Length: 99
Figure (cartoon, one colour):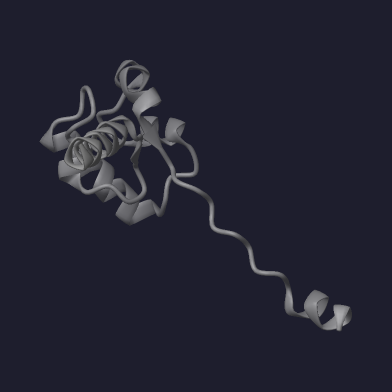
């Protein structure tokens, strides 16, 4: 019985990870190729654009990548993300005033 429960939990975890959005700021070219309408050339273009221009601020920024038009973006927009923004550190002066 315990093996069935563990198997079910593992299956659920794998299914959940399959539905997770691909973070276009950290994904490899191979991961990007899993997206609809993205082959090897477009995946490389995304990685190259990101390397040259820095992280994407929104998923809509994908349309700035050469070869990715609105139609391609429309097919994949629900499957991509830009991750969580990093928390900003409090300025040193503000922290010093609180003491």
